[in-house]
Picture (cartoon, rainbow, N blue to C red):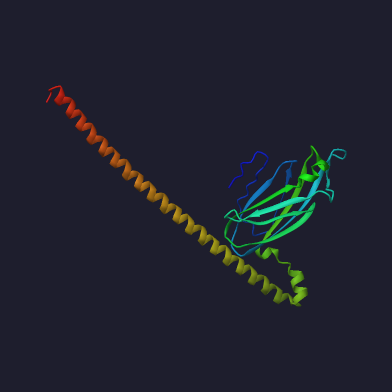
Length: 220
């Protein structure tokens, strides 16, 4: 999936992000960065980001002012918006996927604060965690008073559940690929039949035309 707007910069990341996935990128005053992530259904996703402004005096990136905000918009595989919200210079967003497939995560700075870095660059550090990696196990252990063995069992159960979701999603992708392949093969077959019929009809027409020509010239 690609965005074709003139003022939008698009980053496509087609990779599994079940482990913690961290990166940073730069955006200008009118840029919008979008990421495509493949996520199984009923999977929690947590994204954390922080921003830095380019400082010409120190020739480095410094922590952004709190007045600078980021807008986060997330769309599901059916292009339905499941999250659209304005955050601060540092923020955390959470959503749960209900449809398996490619989810689009877009970020852009708020237009009302552009004067804060007019003509400059904004660096955004983004960390995305998916599935079991969204769980804070030390906090869970303290809250539920779990022993180390119980906590490890809880982690293993969560890992098994995530693996099952991944397997279901892989089966879903295989089914879609099979349907696409069958549809393509069927179209190729019908196109081959159509070409054959066209050749036969053309050949018959040419034979009749030549016969009429020779008869008119009294060659036969």
